[in-house]
Image 1 (cartoon, helix red, strand yellow):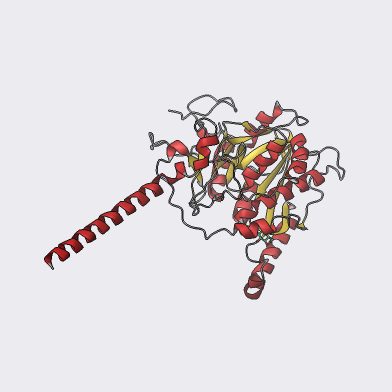
Image 2: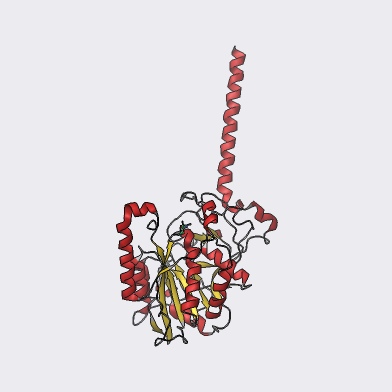
Amino acid sequence: MRRRLRLRGDAWITLLLGAALGLLLYAQRDSTAPTTSAPRAQGRAAPGPSPRLRVFQGPDAGPALQAYEEDTPEPPKPTPPGPFDFGRYLRAKDQRHFPLLINQPHKCRRDGVFGSGPDLLIAVKSVAADFERRQAVRQTWGAEGRVQGALVRRVFLLGLPRGTGSDQAEAEGAGTQTHWHTLLRAESRAYADILLWAFEDTFFNLTLKEIHFLAWASAYCPDARFVFKGDADVFVHVENLLDFLAARDPAQDLLAGDVIVQARPIRLRASKYYIPEAVYGLPAYPAYAGGGGFVFSGATLRRLAGACAQVELFPIDDVFLGMCLQRLRLTPEPHPAFRTFGIPQPSAAPHLRTFDPCFYRELVVVHGLSATDIWLMWHLLHSPRGPACAHPWPAAASSFQWSR
Ligand SMILES: *[C@@H]1O[C@H](CO)[C@@H](O)[C@H](O)[C@H]1NC(C)=O
């Protein structure tokens, strides 16, 4: 009896120890997952991660979705956004043409005729509810007219507000739908800068936004010398952007931005950017420019529109554009002043202020600003005497450094 009891005790301890070991291994595996999540990458990928390699941070943690790999030793703790239905996505993938509900057919005509397009067409991804950001952009870096002699035009790219396209929404929110449509129509009348397509405006439909915009721009704005495309939560230093473009020929291929090379698909189910191997089997994505803001030439616009029409839809829009570029054998050009991953607070110098106009005047694009901050930064930079900065004005394209 006693022996049996002791035996039973031993068995229990073994079981407990086993369970503890299992838990430990599981926790360890979890905490290293982001760097080892692409097992097939090791075999085939290019030698080691490049120093400029960035990883996606899983959770929807505000605008700073991505971060430099070296800045994030801690793995992201993804908050599951609900499983993405890849099966449905793949089945619906061939439906990629949606009607344009609000158009701006005259956006790029000068005196009513095509022939001499704007020097810079600014296209901003937005959603219906984000009226305040659109207003901030209209009044600041997205203002139309002449900037340093260059003619600037602006459009906002929108889909149907989420839920309003479905039966469920019709049942419960026909009023909401009318409300948004009324707003967008009114905005279109007031500002003539709204493009609205009949697909649902979701994160995974941003690729649809990309191809519809490229098709629209090559149809209605084929003579634009350059196109800037970005998010509504970026700050763009348009003068620096124009300085950079001044030396470029719009008839030549160019796509410049915050270029990410050898990014590995995220195989972590809970991540917002999760891509199963069945959807993308290669160990790394083609080089692409961060979707927060990039610029391309008129020549590239026309070629991209054609190339993207041939590429199968892929749910991450900037990676999709990288696939179109790859098809054209066009390498995106990294520009150090495009900060589409925001400005990480340097861990070694947390006292440095990142919201500093002296700092912003060296950049072209910074991602992750509120409407208020966009407005404030623009006014600080454009106040009559400009910001009082300690050091002389740097060259626009010089590589970025933290000032002391
Ligand atoms: C994209 O939009 C279409 C059309 O509104 C919709 O049926 C589909 O569910 C959306 N896809 C995603 C992934 O949100």
